[in-house]
Amino acid sequence: MAHMIRSKFVFLSLKYANRAAPRISVPLKYQRLCFHTSWILDVKGKELLMPSLSPTMENGTIVKWLKNEGDKIEPGDAIADIQTDKAIVTMEFDDEGVLAKIIIPEGTKDIKVGTLIALTVEADEDWKTVELPDQTAKAPAATPAVTQAAPVAAAEAPPPGQQNVFMPALSPTMTTGTIVKWLKKEGDEIQPGDALADIQTDKAIMTFELEEEGILAKILVQEGSQVEIGQLIAITVEKGMDWKQIVVPTSTKPSAAPAAPSPAQPTDAKPPPSEQVYGLAVKRLLEEYGLSSGSIKGTGRTNRLLKGDVLAYIQTHNIQKVAPKSTPAPSTDKARPSSPAERPVSGKPSPYEDIEISNIRAVIAKRLGESKSTIPHSYAVIDIHIDKLVELRSKLKTENINVSLNDFIIKAVAHALLECPDVNTLYQKEQIVRVPKVDVSVAVATPTGLITPIVFDTATKSLTDISKNVRELAEKAKKGQLKPHEFQGGTFTISNLGMFGIKEFSAIINPPQTAILAIGAGREELDLSLTKVTKMSVKLSYDRRAIDEDQAADFLAVLKATLEDPAFLAAGKMQALRYQRDAY
Image 1 (cartoon, one colour):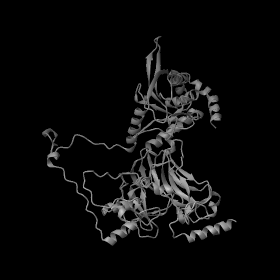
Image 2 (cartoon, one colour):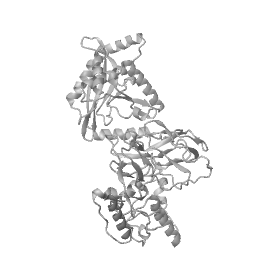
Image 3 (tube, one colour):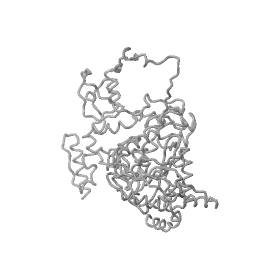
Image 4 (cartoon, helix red, strand yellow):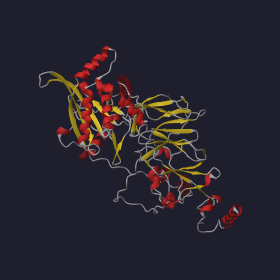
């Protein structure tokens, strides 16, 4: 019966293929028997959407496609590397089939979760005849918006055997990067996994590796240069090719949104634009030759105008490029200083010096500004007697156990967070998220700015383990060698300026965390009985949306009791074991 239905449908398809017949609606139970469920000979693909790979992910960047069009996919195969708001995560496929069409190219940024990124078909279907879904043709305005986020140079396909290397996004918040050092020279061979360059992101200096073999043919950006994500920085060629004979694209900059034309400018008599879909390369050709898409008939699928269509039209009609409009030079009156006091004095050096802001400082400024403007900060301060703590530290030092006061504070904070779980929270998407684990971030000053490496599972670690962990993280932070997972995340932050003699200060919350503790220096005072005591002021900055005043007071009270009786830290081993059991 199935064979008869298939034969009859194929016969009708061939008979009416050349007529303007309406689309045939096939019953659901016969869809598997036909070539296509919406048209006659095309294959309807399964939609592959941008997944949500982290709890806070709203947009993603396709770093690299791990499968090519036409490749077979088995359950569990890696499809693509996707950069989330936290790290680069590999997306796996849960079904079998064939990758038929890649909709979103590599390097495209800010792809919303749920956006169509690729199409797959069954293993026995012809993947070359896959049809794009109807919404792609119905909403052409959305397609260029996604394509424009890709680099301009990516639209120009490189010659066979030549690969373009773009500035990668090595951290979720990275928008620009500085090439610190090229680790390969022009003409050097590259093996998969070889380090190509050291790049300074907004967080640290990271090594950029290549996953394909070849030869480094051309370095387009010199060491010390700061470039945007997606900008062309180098060109590689396949082994055996003459690496000196390469084609450098005319534009290496990432794409920018085109400026809207002024209504006062005269318009040329051009045909109205059509509803055809086209990419950046076609758009640039149309602008260079002053053409409209409505005057050229596209030959691509789903009403798409191809680059070859435009080139053929230009050659047939012998059309010349349109001269770019020149910008008038500024008048001498406006360029002249308004008063003698404003005129620069010739022959004398300027008394001012411009200091370039590093990527890390730029991101710190942006995030702190957002934190202060969006988070309602509340503050609570308390004095803690640390005489017993100083005495215990000195005793441990005689036993060749070197731990700092900051190590005691980190451990005491971890136990206070166990007792007060309402402070060990995150504020995400207008919700308070209570975190079962205690991961304390510790602020570390580096030459390029402040960074907060994380002491993971702080409550389960001993004082010596915490001390060793903090020293290792601080050393890596100052050298710019921290890995993303070592500074991204954390549930609570400590900032200690006591070693600089700062008595008290207010720290700014690091979102999505809800609190940060500022530690001041110890100072000697006389109490009511005229006895000399050592006090230390700590100030808690907390998000009033997530933490109430009484919850903040309870946390500080537990912290005070813990530090004023250091033996309580040793007695807290049972709590640590209980925490470890509950967390896992």
